[in-house]
Amino acid sequence: MAKLNPDPALNSAMAREIAKAASLFEEQRTGNAPKSVTVVLTDTTLVITLHGVLSEAEKALARKPEGAAQIQDFHRKLFVNASNSLRQEIKRITGVEVREATAEIEPASGAVVGVFTTGTTVQVYLLAHPVPSESWNQQ
Image 1 (tube, rainbow, N blue to C red):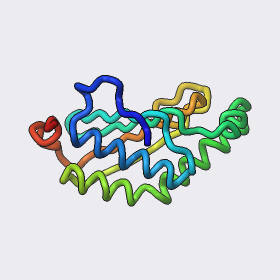
Image 2: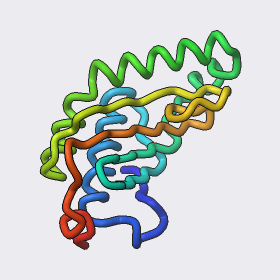
Image 3: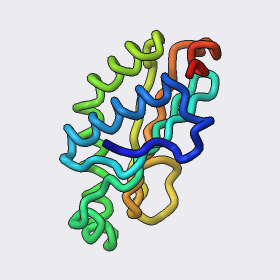
Image 4: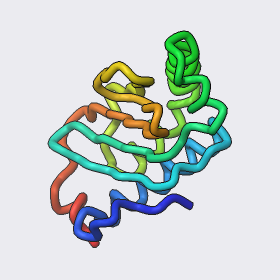
């Protein structure tokens, strides 16, 4: 199982549960468990960062522009086709429906969110409304 954010103050019970769900989701859809997971909630935006998720073969392929484009396309399609289960799990955990979800790949050029050549995935979920802070901050 992946490690959570190293700062325990940032690991509410809800964040821990989402991190575990995201880690399991990533492992089920790609076969690679992340090395660590960071979960951040700001108002209606939930960001899940999965560190160390690219395989060695994907990292090697991503070193060339055409390979990076293939990795980007593959992970984008995989996320679109498989993300419903994680969206439902986030709704179960937070009590709030996920309105939008995206995961993008940044192989080398500096795009905003994604699976980076370093093996990091950033997933951003736009929630339908804020999660009550008292729910999020429960230890």
